[in-house]
Image (cartoon, rainbow, N blue to C red; front, side, top):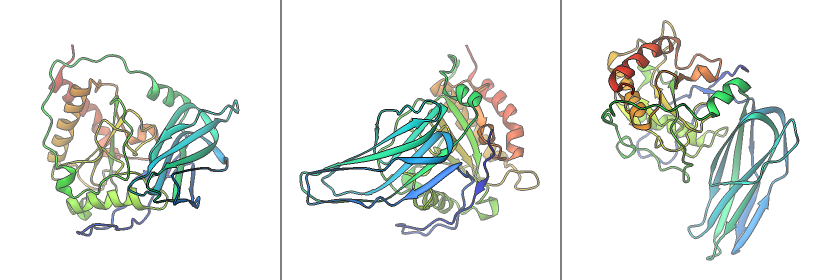
Amino acid sequence: MKKLFSVCSIFLLVGLLIAAPAAWANEDTPDYQTTVNPGFSVVDKTYDHFETEIYEMDTAANNMLISVDAIKSKSCLFRSYARFRYAQTGIWTKYMAFDSEYHFSAVNTVSAYQLMFVVRDPMKGTTTIPRFTVQGVYIDEKTMEYAMQEPAPFEPIKVTTKPALLSRKDWGARPPKSSYSEHAVQRLVVHHSYIPNQSQYKAAASIRGIQNYHMDDPKTGWADIGYHFLIGPEGTIYQGRPETVVGAHASPNTNAVGICLIGDYDPDKDPIPPVMEKSLVSLLSWLCSNYRVNPGVNIFGHCDYSTKSCPGLEVYKRLPQYREQIIKNIGQK
């Protein structure tokens, strides 16, 4: 598996009444990454479309994340489209529609892509696209084949109660930039934030900081916070994206729910608080039982898809005992 390194980018604070403290994200550095300013705008028209040039990639990837920032008039109907060219065969996919964030995953690599934007506006307002970002990651074929296959059936004996969550409203989340793409919950991936670590954690303000980084950094510009859930050292579980939609946390993102533990859990760093572990096991138990995810084979650490240490070696070493506890909690028919 190709090695991916941590990226540390300062986020921009935008549109919050309460300022969030500085947050860095323990995200992978993509193998391919670019930000494009297409200069596309629609003014005083009921219809227009724009097709970009074909972008040739200097390194092939089999996971692509495209994020489009669009400033839309209230009356416009806006759609983005993306297509990809397979590296080995040279065959193009069809154009696939999305709003502002698109995830593409395949076993075979792609070496080029192209975007198209379509605007319909009966009120002839103004719609512009100041930028879009593209991130490509290569993951070895064997890992991709496993991640993309339909999991074997799993039937729990008991569906556990959903743990108490701090809602997006309660932690002051910004609204997403656009609609999400739905997916089936099949895999659960555990992360750590790295920064903020425990001493830097400022409750909901830190979660807002991570969301700002994910949505505003020039290299990401994602539609929303990338994780589905985040857990503070004191055990608070924060709702990120709905678990039923695709996140942006560890390629391949489709069908994977991302859970981020706030802190740095590499050796000799933050201790693992028992109350945080309790919340994690409770959350994983509910997800596994509610969505019929086999905890024995489909709970992963981020490092299972990357050579980085996330969710921290100390947490990763405990994943087997978490899996055992979840099986005790929910059983298996």
